[in-house]
Length: 142
Image (tube, rainbow, N blue to C red):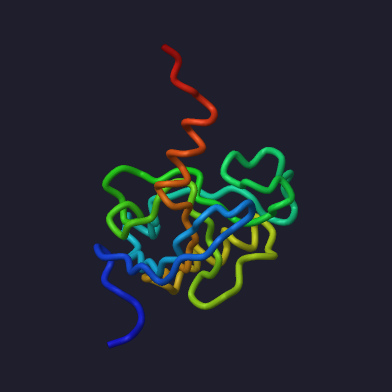
């Protein structure tokens, strides 16, 4: 059996510490594109890239981060079924490094016509860190 898992079961790969001690999980996710006429649908949108203004990226903790992030996931679409989440940072697409690519290069790698399956390596902030940051931004007052 390969290291990739079926679309409905993303695999937890490891946990590492990011900037400021933030924990991230690294996951492999396999998305089976949905045929819609002549189009193959992934069911998510991306933002970021080395040619984009990283200050406009709401998902990066470090505003110099020019990575590719998932900005939208369609409800019930192939990406959601596979376990992809809004805010995930895409590190690889089918083995290709995505850490230093333009927005258009990333889009082209994801939407290749001859590929029915897209294998992603993504990093995701841990739930604990998301909750902690939310509590710091919106403290409860009595």
